[in-house]
Length: 408
Image (tube, rainbow, N blue to C red; front, side, top):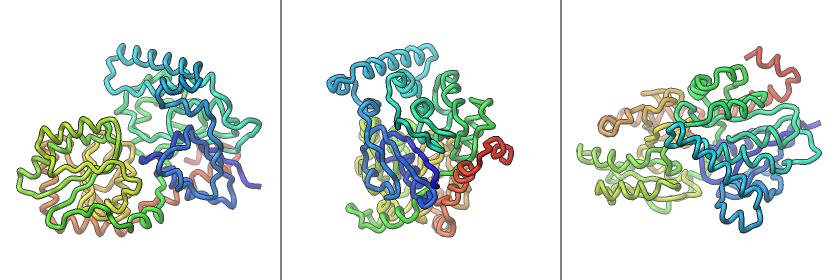
């Protein structure tokens, strides 16, 4: 008999976590496993790319309340859930203020923690062999799913996010396993939650190689210029991605005599800030915001150099996708950068400080031999991580979970 797996996530909007979820779903052997996927909201450009072997469960109205306007959800009649969200927001604000948090991750955790009491079961009268909570907060798979074994995923560097440690410790502790996407993510997570170390297994992001390569062959609607170096960055317009620093970095690169245009693909709350920085630095001609692109891969394939200027990352999926397409990659030295690439071999790590970052990028861009070598090295490597699915199989097939832990 096939083992039953439930995977729970938020939406299928454009993002690294969602693309890595596609990779995981694409790697599963559906002759051996039956997979149900539950999304809080069936939204997003990637929704149509879910593999045919996956059974997408119907939307449950209560879960659609999360991460939407409270005014809208109240008008729809979700009075209790909206009130719970409001209480969670007030409590999160109070906690953040007390602890002097600026970019707090407490709000989303409290939103789920306060609403969980009023949420229905995700699947009634079904016991799964294995349940995966793919994106934090992880309350619902723990409390609203019946499964023999449960696993929660870490996608971020916990040294860079401000959380309620005691609250999150209880949330993570409920799981049999915690899947970490890189060794550095694991190391930093354990610094915050040392008691959870024995639960952690390393499961690198699995990327849908065939999908990336196929979609990359589509013609780019807006061709890059041939007489200039075209830099590209992809990601949500958020604090973590640091795109607000791109205009100043780009300005300094140009002032150092290197002709570049820097293209940004993405969307998010920081777009007004980025546009403001573009204007302030006079980079309207050189920093081009392309916005949200359902298929970013033709742009990655066509750019000269892919740059990830992030302040922090778990393990950036877009960087791996650029490497998969044979691009020279430059990333900033965020804390998990050493687990992202092999510096000087299949990418370069540069300082995050603006002037040093600009000078390092200039030095790299002037070295044509280095750019060629980085590209060729990427072409020789497999970045799909398809073999990582075997770690999940091992857990699912092993009845004695304690035995699996000892073997790791």
